[in-house]
Image (cartoon, rainbow over all chains, first blue to last red; front, side, top):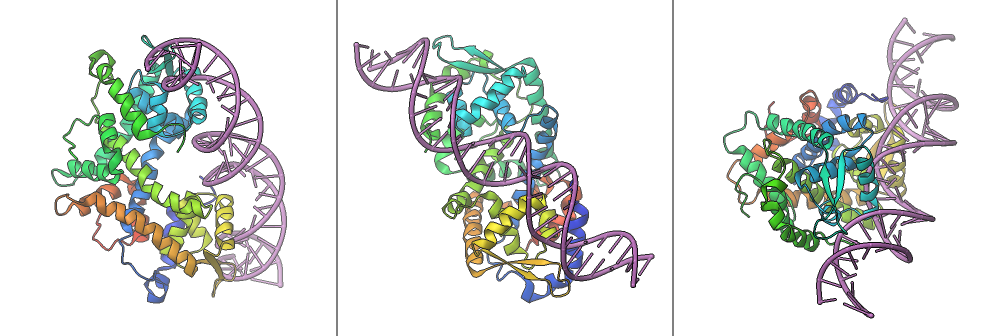
Length: 185
Length: 185
DNA sequence: GAATTATGTCAATATGACTGACGTAAATTT
DNA sequence: AAATTTACGTCAGTCATATTGACATAATTC
């Protein structure tokens, strides 16, 4: 770990500041908006991406590689252009990451049958194995997060997440995620 | 926008690939794990952080500035060390961002009353206004995401997000977020 | 034949993170 | 009073991931 240990340093600090925090003059001016969901989402997403990050670090890959691998695994034969559209990054950014994945034998490129300009992307066996491992880590965290919640909670979370996304992107994303559940708009 | 327009390019591409996708040979090997929550969370978080990013860009600030501003706004008088513990970044990373925020008159530092080594952090009036604006954007998105969901959904989402976080960080984070709702472990 | 599309590549730049070392002042412990 | 710890800052170098803009090539489509 670094020079600061989150769990100990923060809890100690908050203990120390317990007096200050209960002093109204030290409180935030107003709590009109519930801030807690913002912060919970921040910390939840950090841990959610943290699991794969640890595995990827062993391969000297980063989060950018994970995103590419994930969407290629999920959309075998996807074109480079489509991947750019999904990830909304530039060709240059994708190019570097993709080259490293191809060089490492994680992703392979095949010429399009109908259109020979295309470099259709597929995971190799190794890539498939890695992608599954990473997805499983994240899915297990999601499953743990749903434990103890009432029946129907998974569906509520699913609809909540969809509605967090800009509405005009819903149609595209619903096609992309191909949810096995009924996610009507 | 860049050279690729997400909404048009992706939908067109998926249209083109409709045939390929309905061909079983082109499908991912197996869909044992539901991947959809993983992807929905990815896209949801991107849009969630996108709103503040747009505002911050006008100030030539980035997401790192937002995180610092947010937690200072929420914890007036916080010490640098505590902020490092929350954000889990190094002093160097925080130092640069914090200096820019102080120079821009968004955050001010005051010497600790009891401990003169401390540089306690507060938002200025400008900083407070900016922090509220950014929080409001995110809160409005959260509220839109909860529209139409059954009663109790907000509480389910809250518990879901908490349970997404590593359990051994729950205690610290619960103190930090100070949820107005009952978030028992 | 011209225009468009799919892809790749070059050069330059920015942000946000890192490690590791060192320094200073203030507070705390012995 | 001296030693240690804490809070904070800073220097120097590095890395990963992204950006913009221009240009090149081959293949397809109009």
